[in-house]
Image 1 (tube, rainbow, N blue to C red):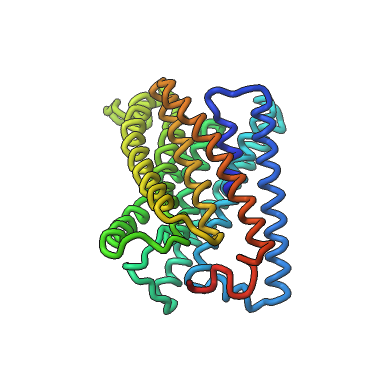
Image 2 (cartoon, rainbow, N blue to C red):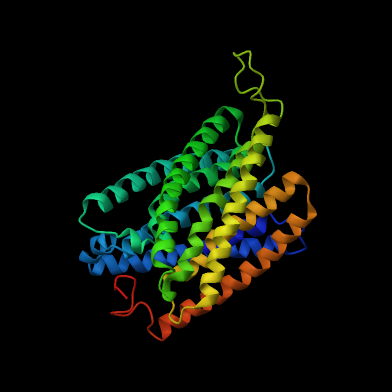
Length: 356
């Protein structure tokens, strides 16, 4: 999902250079290859050892990482829009077919992730697992993340959809974003309460603190993207005497909401940076990827706000953040491979299903 997030991020850079689109395409293809390879490996594992599938989903920590599977699918959908659909000329048969296919993929993803959000949290509530508030970690948000990314997909694909199908997608995207962020906002109270009462998490899991920057970041970029998909001259309530809900007014409201959300994300990001800097982890954990994917949302939100305000400082800040994220992606990938080689992960007693 981090690789796919970078692909989307590279596709919207405000100061592109020759070859940037090619680099983004490479990341998009690499994301597909990694997704297929990992799904194949996991399928072999679960086929050979059937009991491990449910054991993985039911585990108090490892089960939370089922959400990122769907996040990976979300990045594939957005990447397909950026690098495949837009590669064809408008009003061609292939472009129309791909546009319809992307809309179908959006609705299938939305339905599936809503069922995941309901099903996984229902199991966490009634399945006998006990999560102590004084041990709260942002990874508890992962089951609600996939449905929230429906709004991000809507923001990316809506402007290319015909109006009859565009507005339902925007409505569903906004509803899903509202659901996801509302749940995350409730959890934030537990998160801050835990930090105030018991202090920072174990150093080995502080990288997961970057996950907290994700929800406000992705909400900010999504409401801006969805607002921009509404035509300026559009009247959303043509049978009403109220003319307030025009496309231009909606875009202004979206920008006013996005700026404080961006600031909230920046604050969570800064808290995580300080926490990791005070005591860096010594062993690799899957939470390290939290230093990449959630921060792609913060970077994209920075760029989108800069475009809306026409402020070059924001746009160049987005460029710098992109470079840093690519470096962090490379560093995390190397450390992930190293951890497998030296048996820090994917080895008995060293995985996410083992308590520290």
